[in-house]
Image (cartoon, rainbow, N blue to C red):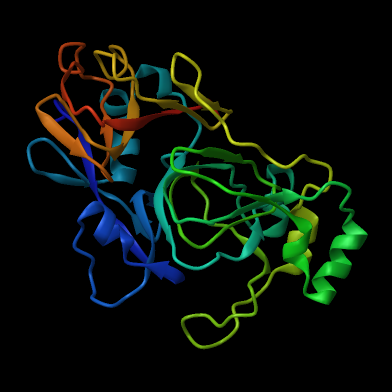
Amino acid sequence: MFNTFITFQPLYQTRVWGGRRLQTLFHRSLPEQNTAYGESWEVSDRPDEQSVCILSDGRHISLHDLWSQHREDVFGPALLDHPALRYPLLMKILDACDDLSIQVHPPAELASELGGEPKTEMWLIVHAEPGAKIYAGLRSGMTKQAFEQAIADGTVADCIHVLEPKVGDCLFIPSGLIHAIGAGLVIYEIQQNSDTTYRVFDWNRLGLDGQPRPLHLEASLRSIDFHGKPPVFQTADAQGKLIQCEFFDIRRGLLDQSHLGITGEHLAIALICGQLTAAGKTLRAGDFAFVPACLTLAQREITALSADADWIEIRLGPA
């Protein structure tokens, strides 16, 4: 049952800022024609958005059942005592054909009081149109008082640090960091299992229902870190280590590596481009999969790798 990769059925989400590049870039068949899909939830253990996992024998099982009933086989002895009642990460592909709202996620110490969940995340840029931008972090010297005035004046965007990403760039977005994804980007997002977003500014547009989307100004002002520095793009070291925090450990795959992890280790992989074959299964660009902990070292051997293969490996942190 767990002798090869575990794959998933994507959960597609319509968004006012979405598009159709999940179809054109990854050759997917989207549920409806002419509908703007902004997100594909690739790995989700949310109560209302539950990933269906496809096992090697063709059987289907929910991710929640996988986490709660097959912890040792799939996730390994090291995660048997993990405190999370649900799989702790949410993994997405985002297709931003318009700017996302300028937003923030609540920090852990405030989330419960505000009625939400903390969300630390990372972004990996897999497609970037010329001139595409990321907004992340407050400009130097920005105070809470000045930011509140900018909200009243409608000039919030002028307060945010701007980055111009290229394909392969990676950004770490901790809870409390104000941010927005700009138009023209396709991003792999790895985050805590949370769906709490507080909007500060939404470019004065209407939602899919023809009404302005609600803003969450009080919760946003309490959540924003007014003392943090704007983020910078992360680069992998010689061993592929990219981002490590208490929630996840992200590494770039290496073309000269021979195996996916070590015996007894669980990891998830996400193909950015090219192809990778191991354990009798081939993954292609846009594919997300679990490597079960119970796979032997021989089953973890990479048996084929295209010259353009590029992927990330995701491991759970202790939190």
